[in-house]
Image 1 (cartoon, rainbow, N blue to C red):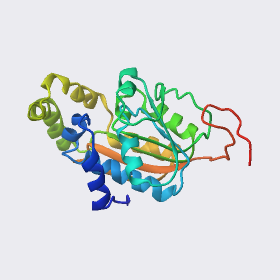
Image 2 (spheres, rainbow, N blue to C red):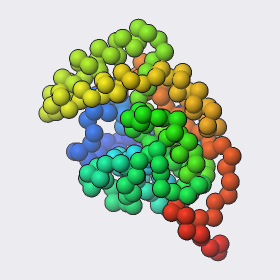
Image 3 (cartoon, rainbow, N blue to C red):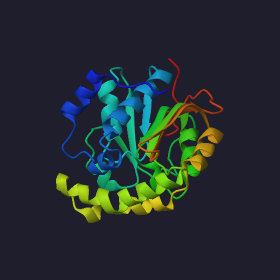
Image 4 (cartoon, rainbow, N blue to C red):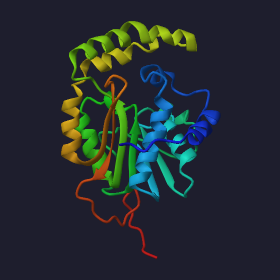
Length: 243
């Protein structure tokens, strides 16, 4: 089971959440995206109590890092990577930012205590290659939430209708344009079913938590890196000196 964020932790996140927060995730997750991010952070910290280096893969504006900083009170060094330079320029947190594809992360093996991602992996044409990269650069824990596709056919049909014909128009109430949200349906349409991705996750990670949420539209995964080795380099590969 995932470790749930407390009401007080969620209150702190919601109270300070930026106005620029990504509305699409909220519509897709039935208003649960912030809670899931908080639960992801709590679950990660359950398996890695005192991380020092944390990588937010395909972090966009840094929403997950923002939640991590609200919940974790220890000292750590976050790095956000994303393929879109405009997203990094608009980041809501002031931390190290690296322009990079999540399929080719420019970091050394075993560089980060935690490698995490939220609402992004489904955008990849090859999710297995992304998981391999996240596993490679992590030395301890990997955690992520992303959009999947139910194995149940009736759920797939219902969600197809929702994502194509309903969700884009709900955006109007948040002053969004329907056409800006229709791309989500096309991403969903080309995805494999969750059982396909689950096999990949268990193949490459020592999975400790696997859950499906919101009519199985999302998967929530936290696990250990397989074949972990002691790391003695910083995240760009420069050797660190033992004190």
